[in-house]
Structures are given as C-alpha cells and as structure tokens.
Length: 410
Image (cartoon, rainbow, N blue to C red; front, side, top):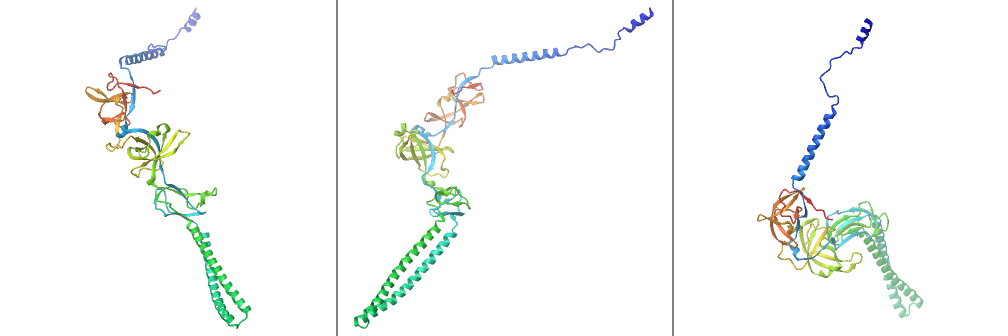
C-alpha cells in the first residue's frame, strides 16, 4: 500500500504561479474595432452625400483680349510676316572665306562689304595682265618710232622719184616699209586694248572676292564661316552657296491665305488690323497691297499680302500673325485691345452685375463693370482678367462657393 501511495503522489500535478486571466486570442478585439471605424466612415460619407449640396454641371468660357474694331470685321485670316525684299548673298567666284565683317542683326547699306574671299591667285593674274599691258605699250612705242622713220624715208624717196633721181624699185621698197610700219602701229594699238581688257577682267575678278550688300537691309543669318569654301550656286557639294542672308525690313508684309469662298470680300486698298502672336496686346494698321492672281488648288485659297502702314522694329520675318479685314476705316475706334467676355457670362444679382469665376471646383461671385459691345463680346472694365474662366448662363440657384462640374465639350 505504501508503494502505491507513493506512486500516486508522483501523479499529482504541481501548479505554478499563473498570472491574471487573459484572453487566449487577442485578435478578435482588433477586428471589432476595425468594423466600428469602417461603419463610422461609411456613416460620415453617407451624411456628406445627402446633406452637402450637389455639384452643378456648368459650361465655362475664357475671358480674352479683343479689339474694339471687331464690330467692323468682315473676315479673319492667319498668315506669316514675310520680307518682300530678301536675298541670300553669294559670291560670283570660288574661293575660301577669309573675312566676315557682319553678324546677325547688323544693318547694312547698299554696296557695303560684307565678306571677303582669298584673292592671292587673282592678284597674281592681275599683275600678269598689267605686265602684258606694259609690254604692249612698249611695242606700240617701238612701232610708233619705226613708223616715224619709215614716213621720213617714204617722203624723201617720193620726192626723189618725182625728180627721176631714184629707181622705181628703191621707192617700192621704202613704200612697203612704210605700210608695214602703219600695220605695226594698228597691231600695237589692238594689243594695248586687249591687254587693258585683260587688266579690267582681272580687276573684276578681284572685286568679286568682295561680297557686297545688294540693298539696304538687316542681316538675318550667317550661312558660312571663315575658312569655308564658297562657290557660286553651290557648285560643289562641300562648298557654301550663300554667305549671309539679308532682308529689307521696310518691305515686311503679312502673307495670308483667304478662302476662295470669301475672296469677294477682299479688295486692293482695304484696311486691315494685324495682330502678332508674339504681341497679342498690340494691333497694327495694315492695307491690302496685293491679291495674287492665282489660287492654291490643294488648299482652295488665294494668297493675299497685307502691308504695314507703320513699321515697328518688333515685327520680325516669319512671325505668325492674324489679320482682320475691316468693312471700313476704324478711325474713331481705338486700336488698343480690351478685356472682353461673352455677354451670357454676366448676370444680375441683387441689382449688381456679376460673373461667376471658376476657382478649382467651386465658383466665386465677382462684381464686374462692363462697357460697350466688342463684336459678339462685351467689354469688361473691372473685375476680370484675360485668361479667367467664368460660367456661361449661370442658373439662378448658383451662388458663391457652390461646387461645380464643368461640362465636357464633346
């Protein structure tokens, strides 16, 4: 029995100190809190969805700069500024460019030297022709002296022949010498003229090494650099044809394409208003100078050239431009552009003229002061600026701070 008691005592479970009771699985409590947070967020979203005002769908338009003469505009066209007098100045001779005296933007006068080619070989040719001229002149002097002596002999023998003191054969020999001397004089004179022509040709060749401006103008581009070979008309694949490109800035005109269907609205001498994309706030007065008497079959347009009435130094070749053809001279209308907007963007609120300015996804009520009509737009004197986006035809329920959704233009 004792042994059994002892054995049973070994089977007794010894309990150690156990801490306070805790949940064997802590994760179910996190799930509960997560579900509670999600429910709160959903409830807040639903409340915002049903309690906040809906976003109104609106159409917007941009505030722009407009010319007061738009009311007189018959037709609009676009084109580019082109110099009517423009030249790629090249050399008449072939040679290496050794000097370039101008750069882009320089103003030059007619006949001014722009560049110079090497001319050592041509200078040598000139020296050779001048030496040949000196030889011809010496030959002429010699022939002249021979003619003088032959003339004396001829006159003396002629008198003796008439007196019967010399035979006819002796006189014939003297006469032949006299004729040869006259022929030698004519030959020497011809040789001198030929040598002088050769000298002039050599001088022209040297002068051709100096590249000069054909007219008053402005240098637009350099087409060659010092050290490059220049040849007339680019006769070599490795030679430059033009050295510089110049243009007469007083001959600038806008070349615009006018549709065939609208060409009857255009006539010579018609007044125009020109605006450059580079300076949209400036308007230039122009006049139709040329209507090219042919049409472009591919584009169905007629080229029209508009001349500037006043030259502006800011106008440069190849600038893009827009032309408004006017029905009459806008002498009493300012040519300065004004801020303008579509009339439907200005409404009356509490006896005030306002426009709803778009800022983000909301609108701001902006009081405005308007002027007279500008074509199909209306002038805005105060309140708006070019580039602002405003609501077109705002509803009576639209107020400051309302959320909006801009209607897409399909």
